[in-house]
Image (cartoon, rainbow, N blue to C red):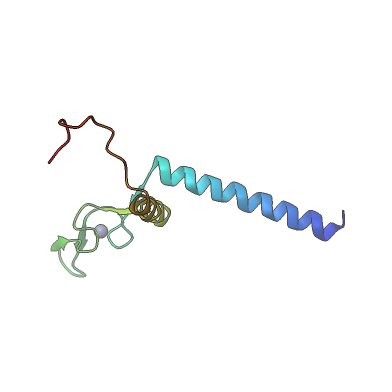
Length: 95
Ligand SMILES: [Zn+2]
């Protein structure tokens, strides 16, 4: 192996580890703090003590991670093409 191949392999392995870590984080902690209000759910006025609720996160202080949003989109896309079959016997099915 040439030094360039070694470097490329090492870079690919590092990228794979980082990607797997991010996917694990998206599965374990799908929410991250809102970037605008830093997770507080309210925004302070520049002067004084006035505040208002954060419109971006609707005062929850949370945002869905981009990876989790992509996962949800892809699963919905898959389920749209593969609808779940109703395995209940006839007569017990919902109308
Ligand atoms: Zn917010």
